[in-house]
Length: 79
Image 1 (tube, rainbow, N blue to C red):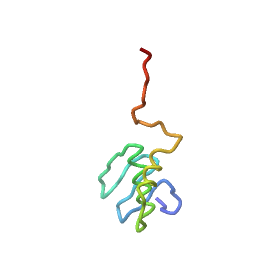
Image 2 (cartoon, one colour):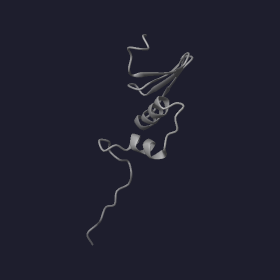
Image 3 (cartoon, rainbow, N blue to C red):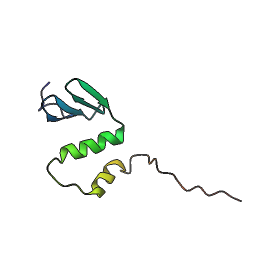
């Protein structure tokens, strides 16, 4: 697989990479599946290796407007 042509893979080291499209991490034959948010966080961290990241950027990564929030919502009930 050509590392330069595949934009969904982030190579971390020899035999170790993150497949963004499938939400999987591979290392020496071991395969781990991550949730969508876990994959987004890992992608953000992997693409920023060697650079400090503020917490706000990580929060924005998993809470963009086009995603459904899993946070509880206030529901008012008529009495």
